Amino acid sequence: MHEIRVAVRWRDMDAYGHVNNAVYLNYLEECRDAWVDGVLGPVAESTWDFVLARVAIDFRTELTQADGEVLVRCRLDSFGQASIRVREEIVTAGGAISAEAESVIVPRDPTTGRSRPLTDEERAALEAELSSEEA
Image 1 (cartoon, helix red, strand yellow):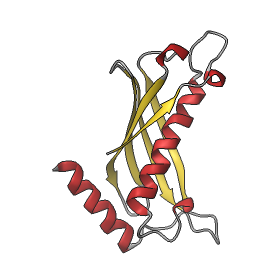
Image 2: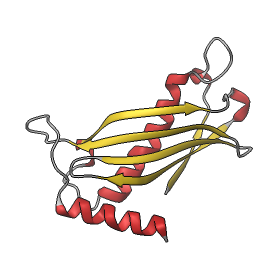
Image 3: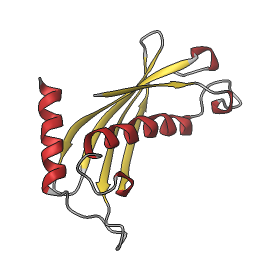
Image 4: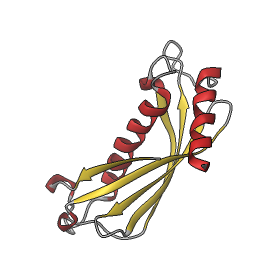
């Protein structure tokens, strides 16, 4: 599991005084990108060639400027021939889960712009990550 802390910024607020729902995507992306880089960076030709194919977010509690910062977590859930499913959550400083998410990322061939199968090295790195999550 990868964790990062993200400051709740003034610009993240909407007219209702809470973090806009679209900003949750930014928080999740920061953590997910760091997770991809940490897990696949040593074996992937380029971690910039992994793209988001799907994201689903369940909002649990609102975030406000008073929260100061949040803890964002990302962990591997599963992977297939050409996709990786991760589970993510955003947690307040007080420990409340503000949002839970599931994202699917796919490796992309930079020359064609289309998805490609995971390489043997990427699959091995993902297997190792799954094993460490289960331990």
